[in-house]
Image (cartoon, rainbow, N blue to C red):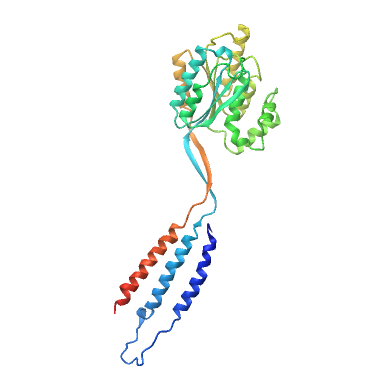
Length: 339
């Protein structure tokens, strides 16, 4: 315990000295004590007891004014939910019907999950984080309204979109120990490099891999950037599921149909290797199954906010002071007059 205003405790020294002098104060005696009966038992100490109670009230008043507090402690605000990163394809091929279909599905998805932390990223030629995982439904919906095709380039880099979502989920945990650039370089190889493996092990040690997932909204045809199987391989190693809600492209993709079909199949296989699934947005039953599949994922405790603060303790000496003051008043005005 410490005090917010410790200098006020100096008041206790003159008060203690005054109490000592008052306790030893001499009274004018009688010329004869023949007719005065000597007090015995508790009554003999009643006057001194009254003074002690009165100074006790002063003591606790000073303690309360000095504002006692606990030491700093950490308080966490938690809820039972999931942490979800939504990654939206905004390439040129998503112009028109495709992007509107995605926005409708995403909007419904957000509204049905008030207890989940949800973040939004978009990708085209490049990728960008729009909203970090949050429970602010209105913020998510307003940000979604501003999402348009070709915002971050005309081409489709699904791999960059997935990696940006991973970064959003672990941004707080990276700190100074890991960097996004180094992590990206370490996964963009034929195998996971030591840097990525160490990252996974550290996240496992911190127990922050549970209850996270990534949902990708795209036409499934990528033509630039790192291959989607690279970040999906990292997700598999971390035990995080990825889901894809695929829509039909509204415009040309710039990819040969046979190559496009191959890319879609490769993406589907990589997604399913994480334990996730590949859904078709045009099929109402599949979208319903997608919602149900997410709902079945086990919820866990999420830390929404961590605050370091002190707890005030002045209320306790304040109550003690008031109680002793009333006792002193009672003794002086009532009890001390009892013969």
